[in-house]
Image 1 (cartoon, rainbow, N blue to C red):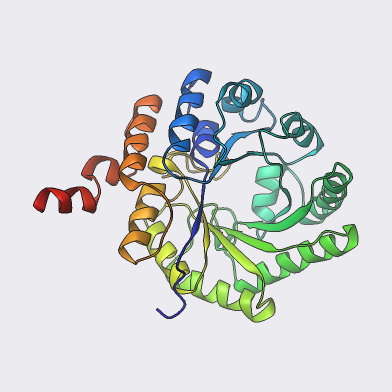
Image 2: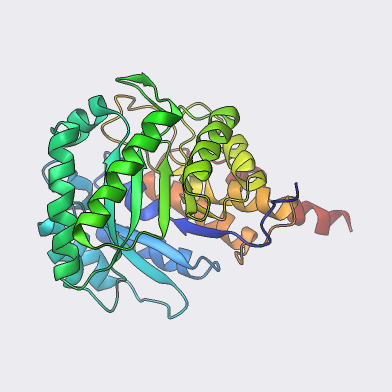
Length: 319
């Protein structure tokens, strides 16, 4: 436990992840309501929307209206997801209200690259070279390499740590060619194949090659192991996690429409609190937002805490 961090950075992605997969339609005003409620919980990072192809992701056809409509809090960093030049331009239209971060996004599974983007790995590398260069021309520093399907893939099967290293090397080659300064690797368990042992092996391999690189985990709870995987990451000293309130979301291209979404933010916060790790988030307030999210989507969400309540709430009653 000697590597346990004192504080972790939680990036809330519930609005973007959740509303991209809900059959909906979810009214624009309800999306705004959720973002503003999350903003008052102590969360410091919220991915508010997705600037993607509205034909493929109709749940975010109203991205501009949502960003224009919510009242930003000065203590919160808001971002929007984008994958290409068109999405970048849409995000930059809100620069000031949104923080626009540049990244190089790759996939450790070629089968998923084809399913998700209709490209081969080689074609995606070329696309990411152009995208990285464009982001920097537009004044957006590129500081992150993200690897999707880093622990396994529904279409390709197990992903070995060496494949993740190979994909990261590809990302770093793009960064070198385009002049990007990478400070973060994000490893995404896009389809819920991670286990604590896989987390340990893959992070160990990455750290052996890049010992000083900051790491982030994007965990899905497809097979109920997200909290166990976060626990493994915390023991390894990983200090940044993506999560979604109530467990909203899921990958629309994973081929599992009934799968659970991301690790629940409130369950991740509870885990951290019980391990003595600070998050800066008011857990009871967050649980209430999880209940709001469940009411907005109109069906039960995966989170256990929005039904059971926090441990501290019961400790106060017992006292």
